[in-house]
Image 1 (spheres, rainbow, N blue to C red):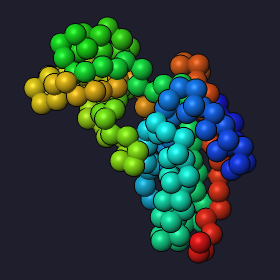
Image 2: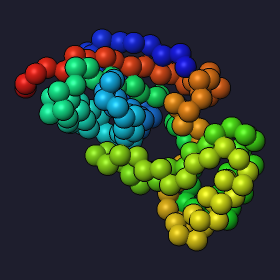
Image 3: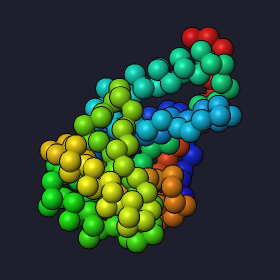
Image 4: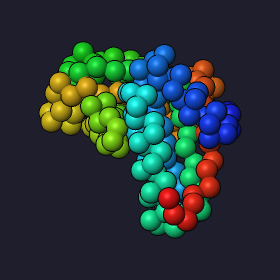
Length: 174
């Protein structure tokens, strides 16, 4: 994945511009050496930027992490979107590329909540099982379908997406 590494100030200035332009940005909050993966959040408002940063730093201080990495994806992630119904299920089937990993998210889970995964896989059988379950339990839920940006190395190139990150040293105290 090709990404630009920016200073904290340039990152947040660019993130503000991206949200103003597209009304959303998918960000990943990650603490290297934490023993876990990042946390995905969908931001819809410029005003959320400062809050997400403060909360991430507070978590870093609490658990004594040394570094915080925030990655942002400009192009709409999970581009097949809509209310879950048979028509959307057909659109998902037509869009999925066989044997490529897929991810289904609940787009109603916006910041401060983590973006909720409600399905994933990489086979036709897994796709059909996920769609059947969603049609049974999550009708009319606003979902997104696509590849998770970190699941495939060529995500940014395949989706012609801008990706940026910033690395911030976590202070010992505020």
